[in-house]
Amino acid sequence: MTDRHAAPTTVEVAERTYAFVQPDGTWFINNAGFVVGDDHVVLVDTCATERRTRALLDAVAAVTDAPVRIVVNTHHHGDHTHGNYLCTDATIVGHRRCREEVERMGIMTLDSIWGAVEWGDLQLRSPDLTFDERVDLVVGDLTVEVRAFGDAAHTTNDVVAWVPERGVLYTGDLVFHGGTPFVVMGSISGSLASLDWLRSFQPAVIVPGHGPVCGVDALDAIEAYFRFVQDLAAEGLAAGVPPLELAQRADLGPFAGLTDPERLVANLHRAYAEAEGTPPGDPIDYLTAFSDMLALNGGGPLRCLA
Ligand SMILES: [Zn+2]
Image 1: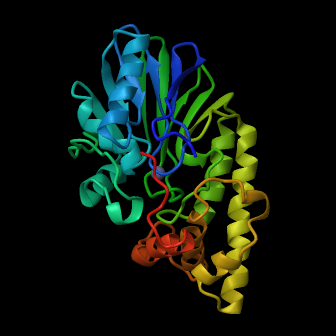
Image 2: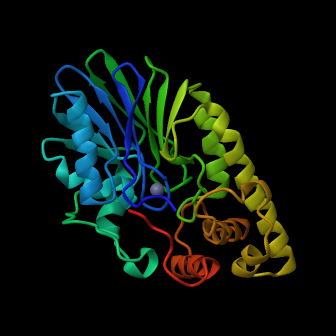
């Protein structure tokens, strides 16, 4: 079992362009990143807990004395936004719907789902500056293009941070590298489309939302997983089998090694809804999706090392 406090690593993926990678990339253990200029730093995402976000800010301070003036939130989930409040000198930038979701959901710390986590003294802070399609951030001689996917994929408000001069693409949770994708709040079809959109940047380096830094080839396995979920859902719907039963008897095949496999049943709930005509990203019965994940996991809280 991975050490609960396995140290994060700072990876210089290109000049002045960094990934902050937290092993092992499972529930709430996200990646962040930062781009360093002479005068200021653009941070991409914060972390789930106070301790982890302080470690992220320490990692930035180990590289540069420049202050974090801008934080980009790739989407509203708490593992990418809970630490916003610790960036006291920064403007928080996110999609308009990201701000709406952070405000609506509040701080999500559900012991019944993830067990007892040392969250710290979290305070809600949503994006101050919102946009719908794109906003460009200048940091030194680099530009960070913050671009919205537009349709629902991982969530309704996914954005990427693209550094064209470096070929570096921070994808947020449009990419789980080595972990099971999680699209219950988004869409399977939208997630498939988002992979083509990510490929269109022709990135040299992808900093995923969870898991090790990778290249564009890592997207193929993710695409295969979404098609597996779609095909499984079509079979389940045709046979009238509920998502939990379908997930319990599913043969994961090449996807058996992905972490957090219980997400399959939540993804199936989204796939069923989508096949039955629910628009991408529209709310579905999240209570059942989450309780089915607990059931698929054997009943207890999910494995969360945050
Ligand atoms: Zn997420």
